Amino acid sequence: MISFDKVVGVHENALYLRNQRLKTLSDNLANSDTPHYKAKDFNFNQALKNATAPVDRDIHLSRTNARHIKLSVAFSGIDLKYRNPFQPALDGNTVELEVEQAKFAENAMRYQATLSFLGKKFSGIKNAFKDE
Image (cartoon, rainbow, N blue to C red; front, side, top):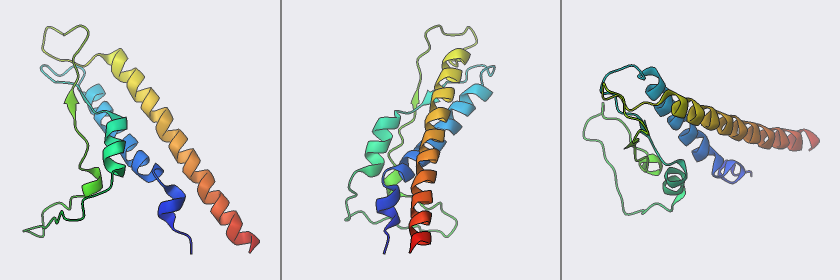
């Protein structure tokens, strides 16, 4: 039997984190003209390392109310930080449009690369089933 964890490996976590980073960067871009808005970001490599680290099995999470949001221990390692601008704006906004656009474009490209890689993996699996 095929273990999809072994097939997709770290790429499932990478895809999730790339998506979260796209959301964070798009929030920054959308608020580029909002006074006192502080640009946020996170270290993708550190978040991926946290997401793929062995989980302490002694941790038990419980919800005390059915409406509470379920927490995935694997993804609790996203540590959003405020970005320090090279040139602070007079209105207190720390979004630098060119920096955000470059980071967004790079992250989007890496997101697409991860999707493409996973697509090829699944195509290979599909072809393996056809050959049987």
